[in-house]
Image (cartoon, rainbow, N blue to C red; front, top):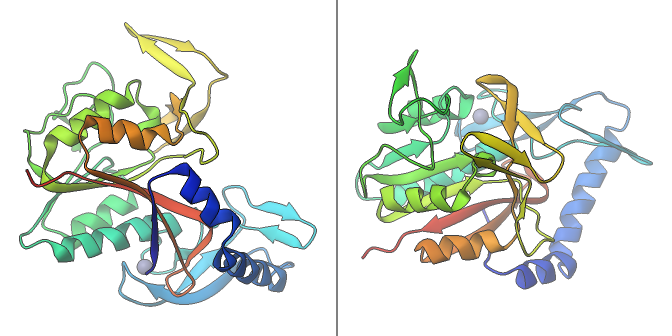
Length: 288
Ligand SMILES: [Zn+2]
């Protein structure tokens, strides 16, 4: 799978604006949408890297499909659900890159996922030996506690020892913490030398600076912008978004110590990773 890595906003925008390959991808996706303009859902053939076999990916109108003059455009990031493992585009892609990272390690890595009650965690647990998962269960609980078989971790204050984890997986979590700086510092602390993090966050690629939407002080939330909540698998109330991240997130991660930090863009019709622009963040800790 071809991955395009970016460390600066300017390079990313040049790539997006002047790249004929992107235009070809968009055309490819538009053609699919035109063929299925009158269908409520459809299947696309492909190869699932999680299942490691040929499969069909389900595309339907869930999670905000858009209506256009030509028909409807699915939410590619959240759909393309493999009919075997039931994981969607972004979930399969992150497991794909983790698989490649694990293959490069000489020993069985310790993997920490900032989720535990999700299909993605179940897949990780099935595929690898040393996998730890956690959820955020509330402010009065100590990190590392287990409540009803669910481990609690406050990622601003992880319970793990220094340099104890090889790979961290964090999917749409960092926007929900009050202090991303503290969380990133904790991630850096617990990673072993050569450790790495694969992370997704809702990213505002046109914004240079992160915009703070809310703060938390002594248990009191102050809203600086209208509150936005995202779905949370363990709470019906959802999770408040504290920050809308811009490109300074990469700089922040570097300042905390990460040697390499990049925005990684991927696309593959074979693997069912359609949609512009799909990306995750990768950061690596140096070996010394
Ligand atoms: Zn699959």
